[in-house]
Amino acid sequence: MTQTDLAGATAAATADTAPGKPRPARPAAKPHGQWKVDGRAPLNPVEVWKQDDDGLSVRQRIETIYAKKGFDSIADDDLHGRFRWWGLYTQRKQGIDGGRTAQLEPAELEDKYLMLRVRIDGGVLSTAQLRVIAGISNDFARGTADLTDRQNIQLHWVEIESVPEIWRRLEAVGLSTTEACGDVPRVILGSPVAGIAKDEILDPSGFIQELNRRFIGNPDFSNLPRKYKTSITGHPDQDTVHEINDVSFVGVLHPDLGPGYDLWVGGGLSTAPRLAQRVGVFVPPEDGPAVWEAVTGIFRDYGYRRMRNKARMKFLIEDWGTEKFRRILQDEYLGRTLPEGIVPPQAKALGDHIGVHEQKDGKFFIGTSPIVGRLSGTTLLALAGVLESHGSRRLRTTPHQKILALDIPAADVEAAIGELAAIGLSARPSIFRRATMACTGIEFCKLAIVNTKDTAAHAVAELEVRLADLIDSGALVNPIGLYINGCPNSCARIQTADIGLKGIVVPTDDGGTTGGFQVHLGGGLASVEREEAGLGRTIRGLKVAVTDLPDYVERVIRSYVAHRAEGETFAEFAHRADEELLQ
Image (cartoon, rainbow, N blue to C red):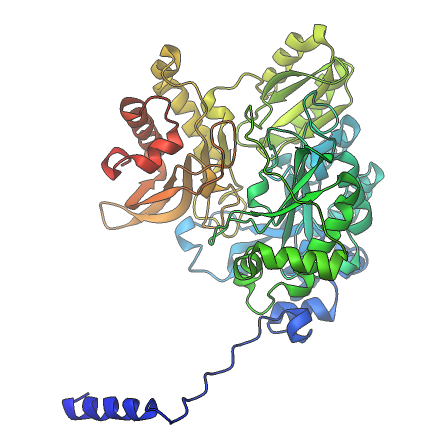
């Protein structure tokens, strides 16, 4: 543009805004696709097929068509959409390097095998149910079984022809895959010590069971804007990661009203992390299901549906704030006012329940750690055998990829600990094994860039040896969370780890690329070590190749031990320290 052109443009702009001349009208804001505001006309292709045919309806086609005619007969909108409503995803084709993940179309990345997610609300399992999952693993999933950080068990290598038989076996023992994925109420995280812990504030078991019975598989809630995650705990150690769920009920003891729940909404991580906020209301136990139904109804009716990447509850809360949310909840959905809430007090112990703990009935539960949730059909069968040999028929999974063995008599505890250790479940894990988590990774996930499970297992083994001097001397006592994720979506909660690792492609010295990580430092959820949750920081330019991970973690932990202040946690150090101490 010449000086003359610029002067003319400036003059024109000045004339357009001169006094007395109306300003040009701003373009109308695009609708968010909120049903109660904009109507139900679908605003993107996913919303179109969701309205055309409910996700739950695909089960009939799986049973009567796809399981009989095979993978190639599956309609695209079913395979890449409605299958999720029944806990099914296509898995990654083997042999595709992580560097090609972003370069290939989804159809080029996927195999003709499925991941199947078994829904385990509250982590509640019997040994009979465990044996059925083990049998399915061995018969139909090449022996795979991974424990997730949402208390589910995932199986791989499943063929569509096997799915009806898998459902038959699961449902015969009270399990299902219903709404284990999809734009629906996902598995309900529940305190894994509900009904058994001596120090719980209240038992949420009935609450969780009622939600499952009334609302899971219910068409009233089978078309939500996006995934919807629930957390419910009655334990004072806040053991269900409430700050990163769409809706959470946290057990509190109200000074006037007794035991009940503090309500939180709007948490979630992925690529746009947000921590849940307190609504400021107290929920009496008998009101829990009604309040959950109301909160979920708000999300269904007011949640954003136009843009998939803005469709989670967290974005609605960010725009509305909790004051407006509370008003809509009480006035439009409940028709009554809830009592003022109280802030949950800080936890007094770690919420992973590792180790030996006495139950209410005088028996004991044993919290054990596999390595980053990696199990197998053989391990599940062996676990059932160990429990039953000590008179137990119950176990729980946890939101930390752990397993609790329940109802162990006092005289059997040490023997049970030894037998559990022999099958890879340690009740006395190292601080690294205890605090390391990993997502599925490139082995099966179409979004992943790096191998997470093997990388994490190798890092744990290395750190146990390399940092033995710090552990033996007492310089390093508390677990330091190492969470490893294969892509940016944060299934392994990397922003809330002491050391969180996001899978990326990193450059090599020879001009090529390799798998590696962006590092997040100092994140964490509310715990015995911190009053409030907080997200980790990133260091500009800090990227670590997969092969260099043990070196980096050793280096940053030794830096912490050498430079920490008195009583300072790793997370506090990570946020305070200069960048050169964190490289």
